Length: 203
Ligand SMILES: Cc1cc2nc3c(=O)[nH]c(=O)nc-3n(C[C@H](O)[C@H](O)[C@H](O)COP(=O)(O)O)c2cc1C
Image (cartoon, rainbow, N blue to C red; front, side, top):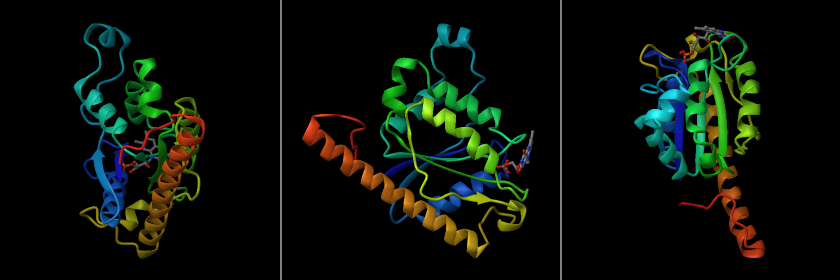
């Protein structure tokens, strides 16, 4: 199973990027996770888009998502909401509108986040929901993971050292994998019975 893992932080010592790598490492026997960050994605500018088209990094990420079975986003929280830099990346990925269905339609999406505060990105995660809805994704709501006190659960190298969070992370990721498997079975059944094509299984 191919999953795109996207971190919403540009920071070298990011807790969210560390969490993404911890998930990749824990699930390496079940998931082929390709990790992306939002470096090299410029601010969205409609004039630039009209003149030059999409930036190469955005094209690359769009293609990777199209060829994946699911998208796993790890989001920081800024001012009780979505970080602008990550929203900017998703906005680019939603261009041009005719591609939205191909990139995001029926796409299984999972979301988690880490913060040094005691709320662990709960408000940022809520704030993402209208975005996922408008893009036509299939968000997974089976479990949630808000990593609070992030400054205490990773060591200086970014390794996850808290066993309770490690267990929750594994359970969360396994739930997401099961959701994708179920989703792909439903698509196959629906194609057989109704001739419908929602999101084709690529693997
Ligand atoms: C502009 C800004 C606003 C922030 N607002 C919040 C907030 O609302 N809630 C919160 O838990 N942390 C907030 N923080 C702290 C971040 O959670 C913290 O910087 C975190 O380390 C960012 O994620 P990263 O480690 O992946 O870069 C804010 C940080 C910045 C820079």
